[in-house]
Length: 341
Image (cartoon, rainbow, N blue to C red; front, side, top):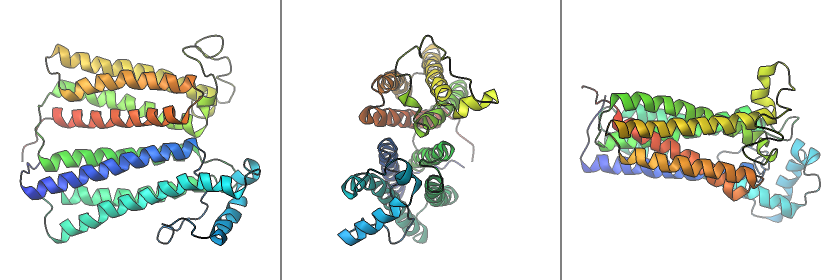
């Protein structure tokens, strides 16, 4: 059901949802930095209630460092690390988890206040409750991801990393969508553009998934050139795993190849969406912003690759992907045909 809400309470609720979406966006960027600095396995404990503060004494620092020393990452990769170096990587993982707690409070506390005060507009109680549940599941998914790097391997599963990111992006898009719906943002129905937009969104999601695989496997650290990979466009060592289809998911060369050309195809497809809007004389600010972001994102991707995965460029590149996804969410909302109630 689509409810047009114009009263002050609805404006407050929509502003709250947009504010939480901004926090989620910040957390995704912090998560990217955590991954890029290889900090994600520095906290080997999961203490959701009492782990909000970092170690406050040298004794506590030594305790958590001793726990880290028992992890595969320390024993196989970071055995050279002293406690001062450990504190640097610990910071990013702690900040990432702290942001998760902050988002939980920023969403959960107002949600229950609005719920018990009966201020949630009709038709929105179920979707907003669903967002609360998804937030809890995201915390569990984060720990499930970290667990994959604490048993016998010094890195997290790139499949779990992609799932963790995908759930964060889903929550972000739903926050933006529900915020617009509660606010009663005006729509300009365009069925053909809407259908085209869903197809573009599908390719964007695939590209983001392979970007997560690329990050999880450190696949961006090979073939730091463009457009060629070695002697040609297709690298010679792309198919050494068996069966062949596994390469696209687990061979770092094939994963990077898939991500870079998925990105180029997706960019062309999205520019086609903009051209579609221009042809139908239905250009709007989301479509125009989308076209600008596409060019910026391709440039950032190539620059990240050529830089050997500079942390600043790579984090900005992930931020660009998130902005593209938000813009697509707005576009799909505004072009959706108004449902009858």
